[in-house]
Amino acid sequence: MQPMKVSELGEFGLIRLIHTSIARYEIPEQAPWRDVLVGIGDDAAAWQSDDGIQLATTDTLVQDIHFDLRTTDWKGLGWKALAVNLSDIAAMGGIPRYALLSLALPGELETEDISEFSDAMAQLAREFGVAIVGGNIAAAPNVVITVMIIGRSKGKMILKRSTASPGERIAITGYLGSSAAGLEMLRGKSVSDREGGRILRQAHLKPMPKIREGQILIQEGVRTAIDVSDGLIADLNHICELSKVNARIRMEQLPVHQVVRANFPNYEELALCGGEDYQILFTADEATIARVRLALDCPVTVIGDVTEEKLATRVTVVDSKGDVIPCPKGGWEHFKNGVLKTGFP
Image 1 (cartoon, rainbow, N blue to C red):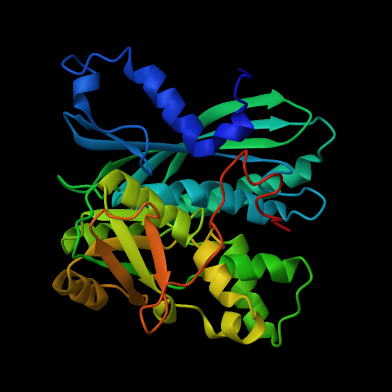
Image 2: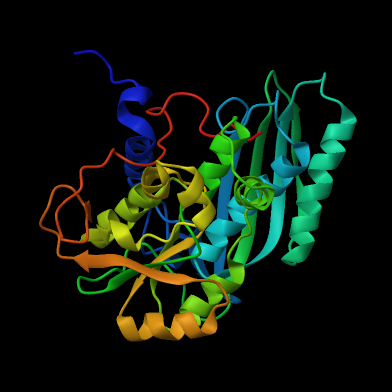
């Protein structure tokens, strides 16, 4: 029997494999393991300390997988490298506090580029009260950027992926598909007006982490959430898998910005599978969602329902008549999607 390759297992299968190996050596009744509230598999890890619930997350951007240096804006790269990590803390309803930055760089890079990268990252960090306190630098043939964020919960509750219940509604902040549309535009797709182009470029290159929104979700009674990074279908599937439920999405209710609808005939696919919108996808009852709408400044849209776990296909998309719409397997998965997740020009 041939050994299985990582590319055959895929990113999420690999996470399960590593988790299984690690779990064999844990001692749940002893510290520090007994203090862990959320471990491998959520947006961030969470553990109980004397100072409350602590949070930690990390993410890596790799040249020619996440970005292309021939067209990359270094300011945008610095901003986004931090933003994607802050978004994970937002999806837990937490407050980011400290950041570590690890850079692997080829020696021929210009120092001015790294200054632009660092300035943009520091600007975003200050905006959210995050101190960049250290990290590591190494020489490498390609650019690899890893950021780690340490944060805490505001109170005694955090948002998790594993607590969705049948009968709850599925809702999302903001718009879907704007980042993916921005990427298509930056790769050459024309957009009819300058302001529309600015909106899409901003959505892709400078996403704004939903830190305040995540905290308000907890305050209003939401308990289940995830940020949309890999795509709506893929990320909702994570909630369904951990919560042991199914989900039904109504296509006509997806919140897609008018600029995307007007310029991209494939806007439904972008909304379902595009990813990198960094909005917060959450589940709750109707009364809770109504309170969230009143408390937030951004749009909040109900897009579907949590259902009992009966189907092998965890996420189903239906039209206005309730008929199932065939749609591509959505979202990004490392090792299975090839190279260049995002053009990141």
